[in-house]
Length: 301
Image 1: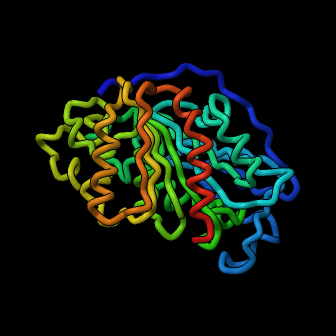
Image 2: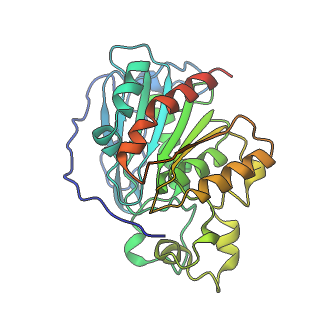
């Protein structure tokens, strides 16, 4: 499988002040409640504290990971969408290159955009993981640090809210795995142009760079971060979309996941194939309306 990078110019987003959630100072301190309204238990009031867009950093192994939260200012809050970027894609490109943010906000969804860098959304790292990739956050960081921090300080992503997760390219893999990890938090998932079984990519530099070689560490490749081998636990409905002309990630990998979901009884999942599309933002943008409709139908169910 061929991977590619986008060059980009960082975008500066303002930090909100009153009535917002933000981390304390200090590079290694976890996010804590900074608003008295948030000191209620998570099982109490579930009204979000945010009133504005917010950008803050959450530490991971000495590095500050940017998390942007877009919040609907003029529409009633409906729920939250975690939107994951592809490998080395900027987190804000979901907003800059597609209509996801504008359309989701218009429907009342908050959108959470973590900066994942060169993460492949693995749950852990290994002695064989490339040293220069250790600074990029893992899925366990999202599950154990990022999401609890947002729950506590912003009252978003609570279990009784309408929460969804989506991703494109490598982020699609991350979205499916996060939905597998947290079925009580996420009601639905959308995965665009993703791959979900790394054992089909045993020569891929990304996977070898994280797991080590397939021949030496076959169990890691088979059992870790593999949606196919964990399919019985993947109960969240998945919206899969893929371009037939994708030269980066073949369509066969979304077909593989969809067939496995059907065999496991996950009947609310769907697969959409665009006969002309490739691995492009044009295709991913064309799926925004359908993804939001998929999420809407699963709200409150």
